Length: 241
Image (tube, rainbow, N blue to C red; front, side, top):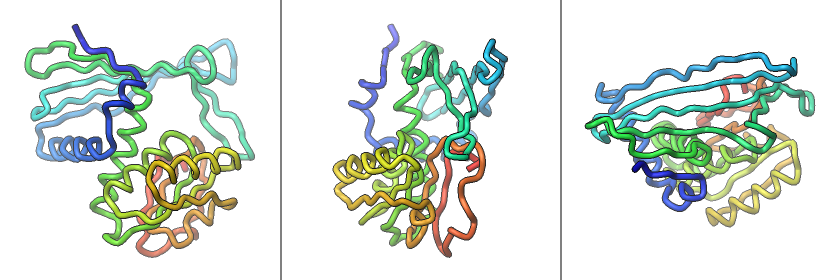
């Protein structure tokens, strides 16, 4: 009987420290040729609403040393509305605020279905953890100040991952929604035990920061190259940011 793991269970058993270590091992396997993955595949189907499309998404991968293979499946209704002049991507399943993402985990030794997992929390941890692996090798050794664009789940896990690989002193966060950026600052300060300051201008996130992460749903550029500073480590979740 496969394990059934929802978001609540995942939050109980996953730590960012473990996530960073597991991801680094997985990337090493891929580099050595004992791991494999298939690029994400999306299909889009028009709906009865011309402003919304159905998107079906899959991706797969497997690792020899871990002895597992997995497929991730997402089923979304997608739209691209304007918010404060920026084109953004919104998605949901059935109704706004609900999502459908599943991971089927298999044994690479005998083919057994090991687990069915909800992908929401795990996905945020994976993306944040990947950013942590990158910062471990690419950010300055004495990096201690982080800037974050965005205030959602990805913004949380990115900052958590940076705290795993560097000794952070403080962070800054910008979101166009004042309430959300202030809530994020309080929440992350309590979780990490560092100073987290909400700022009113996205350029302030970059000023004096050693590491900056853009974790938004923007579907067009929101970052100016002139904000980047020498030696800064920068990453983004969406390539169009």
